[in-house]
Image (cartoon, rainbow, N blue to C red; front, side, top):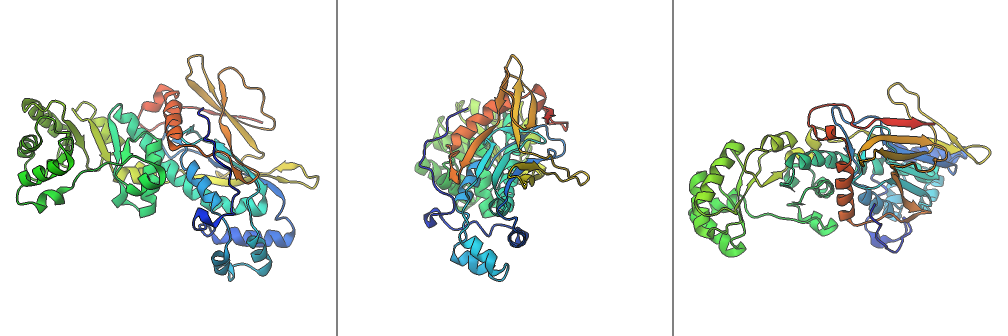
Length: 445
C-alpha cells in the first residue's frame, strides 16, 4: 500500500476557509432524530456506524471503492454556520439548534482505501463517534460513495475491456454539472487516461484532453479549411474529427493538411469496427502509419470489448459511464452496528428486517491471497482481529482520528491501488457476462 501524503491535519468543521458548508446536503430526518435523541438523553452515546453493500449490483463480479477523498473534503466542510442554522430554525427546536451551533466531529473513521475492490458485506467505512455526530453524516457519505463507486465500478469494467488502449471520459453533457466532475475523478481512479472536464482538472488534477466537434468543421467554408485551421493552431499532433461528411475524403484531407505526422482521427458514427479497418488501411497507404484512430459514440464495456479486434487506439466514453453503465448507484447503506451500553462498553446491535439485515458489532476486514498473490476470499469479522496470516492483508485504513483527517492521499495513489487490487482478482473478474461475485465473503464472529 502506498504511504499517505504527509499533510497538516485539519480539525473537522472549524475553518470557513474550507468552502461552503455541506451540512444541509442531508435528509430532514437526520436532524429530527438528533432532536429526539437529545430529548431522551441518548444523543451523546458512543456509536459505531458502518457503510456497506448487502450485495453487488445484479450480475456484477466486483465493486470499486471511490469517493473517499471527496468524502474527507466534505467532512471538513460539515459545519453549522449561521446561514445553515437559519435554514434549520423551522426544522428543529432551540435545544437542537444550540447543539448544532457547537457541532464538531470528534470521532474516528476507518475505511477501505480508495480504488480498492470490494464485495458484499465489505465494511467500506466504519465511523465511531457520539450518535449526535455520526448520525448526521449518513446521507452525505452515502451520496458520495454510492455515486462515485458506481462510476468507478463501471469504469473498471471498461478499462479492463480496453486492455492497453486508452479510455477518455467525455460524459459531462450527459449528467448534472457537479456529478460530471465527480464522475471524471472516479473514472480516473479506475484507469481512465483522462477527461474532457476542466473542473476535474482544476479540483482533482485529472488530465484533460480534447480538440474539436462537428461545429468547428461546419463553421468553415470547407472541410479542408477547417482541418488546416486546426492544424495551424494546435499542431500536426492534433486529432481531426473525420465523419462530418465523407470519412474517406476527410482522412485524405486530414493527412494533406497535417502530413504523415497527423496525431489522430476520430470516428463518431457508423459501424465503428468496419470504419476503423477502412481508415487504418487508408492511413497506412497515405504514409500516416503512426496516426491513431479514436472512436466515440455511446460506448460501454460491451461495445469496447466488441471492438477489440478492430485497429482502434482509444475510446471516448460518455453517457454509459456517467450512468454507471446501467447501475447509477451501488446500493450502499449506513447502519448502526454498535452503541454504548449502560456499563460504557459497546453493545452490538442489528437490523433483522427481511432482506435488509445488518450484522452487529464493529468489524475488521482482510483479503486472503494464495501463494501466487491471487485473491481467494474476503474475510470480515467482529471482536479483536487475529494476527495476520500468510497471504492476508488488512483492508481498513485510518481516515480520521479524533476529528482530524489523517487519510488524505494523492489521486494517483488510488489509481495505482486500483490497478493492483484488480490485477489480484481471479480470472473470472475479467468476464463481462453476469455472474456471482468473484470472491466469497467469509464472516467470522
